[in-house]
Amino acid sequence: MTDVVKTARDLGATTFVDYLNEAGLTERLTTPGEAITLFAPTNEAFQQLSPSDQESLRVSLLESESPFLLHHVVSGRKLHSKDFRGEQEVETLNRGAKLRINKYNHGMTTVNCAPMVRKDQQATNGIVHLIDRVLVPPPANGAPSLPEALFSDGRFRELSRMMLQSNYVNELRRGGPYTVLAPDDEAFQSISNQEMQRITGDPDARLALLKHHIIPHTVCLPAVIDTHKMKAVDGERLQLACNQSGVYVEDAKVAKDQIVAQNGVISVISKVLIPDRARSVMSLLGRRPEQVSTFNRLLKKSGVESYLTKPNITVTVFAPSNFAFNQMPEEEFSLLDEDQKKLEELMKHHVVVGRVKTESISDDQKVDSVDGQNALRLKVYRNEVGVESAILEDQDIEGQNGVIHIINRVLTPPSHSIMELLQSKEEYSTMADAIHHVQEFEPHFLSSVSNHSFTMFAPTNDAFEKLGKDNLHSLMKNRKKLKKMVQNHVVDNMFATGSIHTKLQYNVQTEYQTVKVHKEKDGLMVNSAHVIEPDVVTRDGIVHCIDEVLVPERRRRKS
Image 1: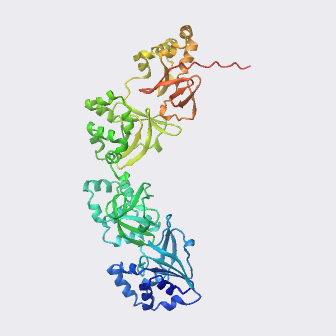
Image 2 (image 1 turned 90 degrees about the horizontal axis):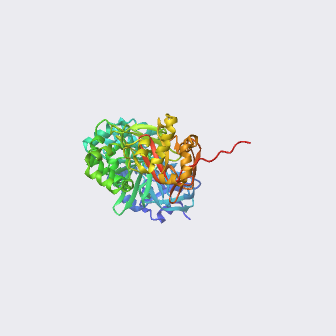
Image 3 (image 1 turned 120 degrees about the vertical axis):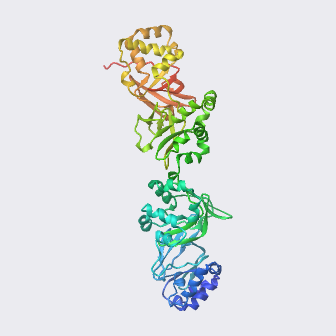
C-alpha cells in the first residue's frame, strides 16, 4: 500500500499527479499522520477542460496554494463511500471551499456532479476516489448563490428579469440545494410576444413558471441514465430522460455542462417549460387528448372557445371525458353535430365564470353556468366531489385563466322539475297520482324539500303492480300510509350514483325511514329494489327509477 499521491498515479491519474508535483504539493499530501481524501481526476478529464479553465489551471499552478488542485483535497478525514450521504458537504483545502456529494439509487456517487468511476482506493495516509471530471474551484470570494450565478452569466437575462419581478431571488438564494433548469434567452425567443405578455402580466403564472424550472434537490446529469419523474417546486412532475443524443427534461435538451453554485446546480435547457398554471384553459384541454379530445373539438365547433380566450376573464370548465361522450345515446350525440344552437347551449352549460377549486366547494353550492339559464349544483360526497349527476374524475387542473375539472358524465341542462318529470312519463303515473292524493289534503306536502335539490327513488307502475291490486287500492285510500310510502322515497339531499362505491353499504335517511343503498355488479340497489334508470337530473333534484316500491317497515311498539 502506498500514499495517496502514488495511489492516484497507480490508478492512472498521472496528469493530476504531475500537476501536484509541479505545484509543490506532493510533500504536503504525503506527510504521515494526517488523513487525506483525494478526488483524483482522470487524464481524460483534464483534456475536457474548456480553454478558459485550462488557463485558470495554469495560473493556479504558480500559486503556493493552488486553488485548482487543493479543491480536490479533503484533509483530516478519510471519506469512505459507505459513509457518504446525499447532499453531504465537505470542506476542501482550497480556502475551505465545499464540495457536495450525492448518492443515487442506481449506485452512482458524484462529487460536485462529477461521477466517481473508482471509489475507496486505500492508501497509507488516506483514500483516493477516481473521478471523471476536474472540479473547477469557485472564485476567491466564494461560490456564488444560484441567483448570483444566473445574473452574472450573460445567457439568462430573461430568466433573471422574471426572477426579479417575482421577488423570488431571496427564496432561491437562501434555500437549497436546488437544481435550476435554466432556459437561455434564445429559448425564450421561441415563445410568442402575446404569450409572454400573458404570462409575465400574471404574477401567479409568472411565479409558477419560475418554480416549474426548479427541482428541490441536486440533479447531476451523469446520474440521469434512464427515465425519471421528479417533482418541481411548483408541485408538477417533470420527466428527465437519457438517450443517445443526450439528456432531456420533457422535450427540452439539457446542455452537458452544469454550473455548480453555492446552494445547487444550474442546467441550461433549450426550451422554456410551461407549467399548467401558466397555460390557457384551451391549451390545457388540448394537451389532454386521451381524456377530453371530444369536448375540445365540440368547444371549438360551438364557438364557445372564443369565450374561454377572452382577456381578463377567468373560468371554470367541467369537461366531460371522452368516455362520458361515448355513453351518450347515439341519436343525442349526432344531434350536437347538426344543431349548432343546441351544441352552443350544451357547451356553455359546462362553463362557469371564476375559479371554482374543490377546496372551496361546499355541499349543495350553486354556481351559474354561462348559458345564462341554469345553475350547476355542486356536491361534496364522502370521497368525491360532484356536479349535477357527474363525479369529478380529475380535478383542479389550474391554468392561467381558469380551472378544469374532468367529469364522468355530460351535463345536460334539465328541462323539468321532479313532479313535471313524473307527470310527463306514463311509467311514473302511479307515483305521480300518489303524490297528488297526499297533496289534496296537505297542499304543502314536499314543499320543505322542494326549496332545494332533493333525490327521489321513483317506482315504475310495474313496481306498484307487484304490491297486488287490492294492496295498491288499499294504499291509495289510506292517507297516512300513502304519505309515509311517498316520504320513504324522498331524500332531503341530492346524490348521484357515481358517489356510491362497491363493497360499502350506505344508510340513507329518507323523509320517513332509513333505506340501505349499495352497489352490486349489475347495478345499484335500494333495499331490495334495483335502480333501473339512474341519475335523471331535474331542475330541483335527481331521480333514480326503481323496480320495487320501498314499503316502509312496520315500527315496533315500545313495551
